[in-house]
Image (tube, rainbow, N blue to C red; front, side):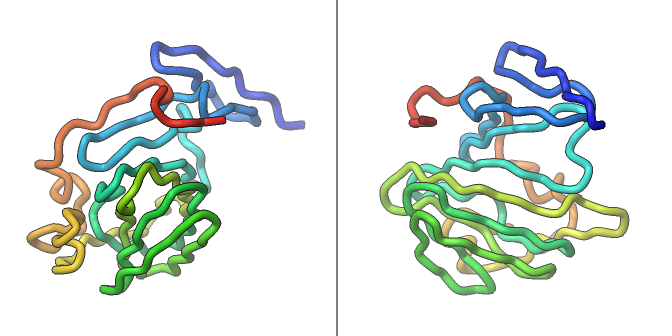
Length: 178
């Protein structure tokens, strides 16, 4: 039998401690935020989930989730509420609740908050396995939305070097999590 992981209260919310199954409401979990890249819920603690990365990312109007990129592992995205845009393979698509975006390995993409916010997106991706890659290509479309790099890189530290601090926060009180 798989043991239940203990949920530990921190100053910013609950985090699972150690491996095992658990039930955790997004209202009670630790969130992260970056002024340029929105807010997201962290359902994992240490150790991180071994096989899947999963979060809910909340974007305000015009706010990108990250930099335009492609990964060597697949990802999937489901818009839960609000409206946003996906910039994908140099195309811009409008999305609304229950729209799903599948990104096979190697698909360039980024999400940007729509004209009215906020927008919540469930994001799921295969964990970075040995030999997995990520690339941040130059894209005029992504740069026009504040989501692009000036020089192509495969190093996230280089891509995000001048984008501000990321910090942990309690669940946002100004966004409905009911």
